Image (cartoon, rainbow, N blue to C red; front, top):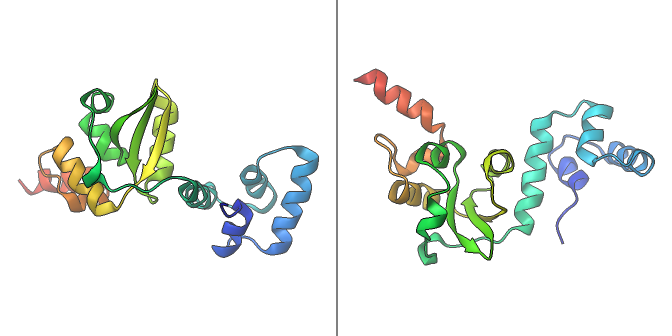
Length: 166
C-alpha cells in the first residue's frame, strides 16, 4: 500500500500532523483533492505537492531493468529526440493499447505532465535507474553533445553550453 500524500508531506517537513488532519476534515466537506487544499489552506507550493505526489505514484509503479526490455519501433516513433531528452522519457513497448514509458522518480512529474498533454495514446510508466535511462536515451535517441550523464542535469542547458564553447 502506498503512503498517503499527507504522510509524505509530513515526512518532507512541509506539513504538520495537525495541518494534514485539517485538510482531511475539509476534504470530506469540500470534496477537493488533497494537494489542492494543501495549497489553498496552507500555501504549500505546487512543486512540493508534485514532488510528494511523484513519490507516491512511484511506489505504485513497477521498476524495470532496461537491459532486459525489448524496445518496439512503433513505440519509439511516438516521441522525438528532443521530447525524450527534455522530459526524460523512453517509450519501451505497447501493453495492449497502452504505451509503456520509462522515466525516473525525479523526472516523473514532468514526464506525466508531458504525456497527459501531448500523447494521443493511453500511457503507463515504469521507473528506471537514472544511469540506465541516460544510456538508453543515448542508444535510442542520440543527440549530438548529449551523454548518459546529461539525464542528471538540464540537457538543453548542456547543449547550450556546448554550442557556446564552439
